[in-house]
Image: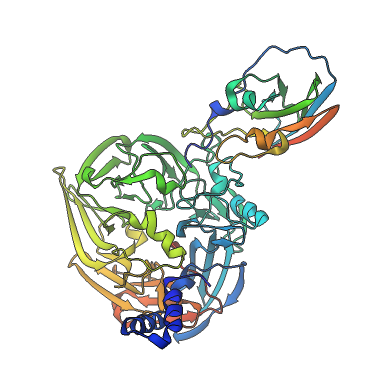
Length: 486
Length: 141
C-alpha cells in the first residue's frame, strides 16, 4: 500500500470516530468516494504473456486491424530503494493487437542495462529525471541509466523503445524481446534521441537530441537508417521534451525552464525564468542553417501537436502548462501517491506569423497528449485528439476529446472518475475520405474493476463513447505514448 | 546525464618507465569487440595519480591483433594498483567521443569497475598485487 494523503485521512477519521467533526466526516467521505488512482503508478512485477481480451461493450468495427504499441513506466519500487519520479520507472512496452474482431494484449519490460543492474541489487539505484540515484549505481554511459520508458517508434522491421537522454532500444515487434541499443553511426554512439520523433506522411523520420545549448538533428529513412545528423546551436539550454514540424520546417519551442546547473537529478538543474519568455526556433528542413527566431509569452509545456502552414504563417497546437512545477515536483508527488494541487494543462494554438510576431490562443479546455492524423503530419488539418478531464488532484485524465481548430469546438467523452484515460491514437478508417473518417484507439485503467481496458471510439461521434471496449485480466499502470501500426 | 564522462578524464599520459626493484607482475587480458586498432593501458600506484594529479607508473600500447590480447607489467613493487584502458578502435591514438563529449570507443578499469557518471574511482578500481596477478578485462562493449 502506498502511503497517501487519502489513507492518512481515512486513518485519522477512523481513529477519531468518537470525536468526529463535520470536517473529518467530509474528508472521510471524499476519500472513500475517490477511486484508488495509485494503481496508475503501481508496480508490475513481471512481463505480461499474450492473452485474449474480453469484449465487454459493443463490437469491433469491420476493417479495424492493427497493433497499438504503447510505452510507459511500470516499475518504480524495489526493497533497496525506489524511483522518486513518475518519469524514472522502467519502461514496459504494451502490445494491443486487434484483428478478426478480437483483441490481444502482451507487455514486456525493456531489458535495459538499468533494469539488469537494479534487478541484481534489488534496488532502484539509477539517477534520472527526478530521482537522485544511489552511489551504488554503475554508470559509464548515458545508456546505463536509460529507462527506455517514454514512447515507441517503428523503424523497418524493428520497434524502438524511446527515452530522451540516450539511444533507442530495438525490440522485436511481435515478441517484444529486447534486441540491442541502437547506434545509428559509430561516432554517434550514446547520443540522445528524443521520444517524440516527427514522421512525415512518406515515412521520413526527424528527431532531436538535446545537449544543453545545442542539439543534434536526426534525419532517418522510413526503415530507420541514418540519412543525416547535424549539430545545431540553440539560443538557450531549454528543456525540450518534444518539437514539431511542418512539411518544410522544424519548430523547436524553447520554454523558459532552462538548464543552469549540471546536477542530478536532471530536473534539479533547471530554473523557471518566466521573465525571459518563450523562444521558438524555426529551421528550414532543406538547410538547417536557415533559421528564424520568434518570441512569445512564457509558458511551460511537454507536448506539441503537428504543425502546418497557412500562407506564410506556421500553426501548431500545444498543451500549455502554467509553469514546469509538475516536472520539477508534481510527478514526484504522484508516484508517492500524493494528490496534486497544481493547475492542469490547457489547449492552445500558436501562430507564428510571417511578419515575425506570434499569437497564442488559449482555449478554456483542459488538454494533454495531443495527437492527430499521421497522414496529415506537417500538413493542413482540423482535428486534434487529446485527453481531458476537470480534476486537478491527479495528472491523469478521465476523458478523451476531439478539438476542431476550424471552429474551435471540443467534443468529448467522459469515462468517469473511476477511469484513468491514456493518450489515444488517430487511426484512419479504411478508404477514409475525410479527416473525421477515423477511430480513436487507446486504453484506460478501470480503477473499480482494477483492470486495463482497450477502447475504440468513432471520431465523428466521440460523445457516444466507445464502439468497442475490451477488458484485460491485468491492470497496467498509466503509460505515456504510443503508435498505431496498421 | 549529458556530460557523464569526458575523454580528458580518461586521458592516458605517457611517462618514462621507471626501474623497480621488486618482483610483482600484473597481467591484464583484454577481450575486445573487434581486432582493429590498439588498446591503450595505464597503470597507477596511488589514488592521487589515478585521480588525475599524477602520472601512471606504467603505460602500454597493445596492437589489437585478435579479440583477446594482453599486457603485462613486470617487476613492480608489491602494493595497490589501478588500471585504465581504452580500445582505440580506429588507431588514431585518441579516445573518440561523440559530439556531446561522450566516449564512443570502449573503455574499462581494473576489476572491470564502472563509475557513477564518471570514470570508476580508485575505491572501485584498485587491487592489491604481490607476486603474479592477472585480471581479465572486458573491452568488448
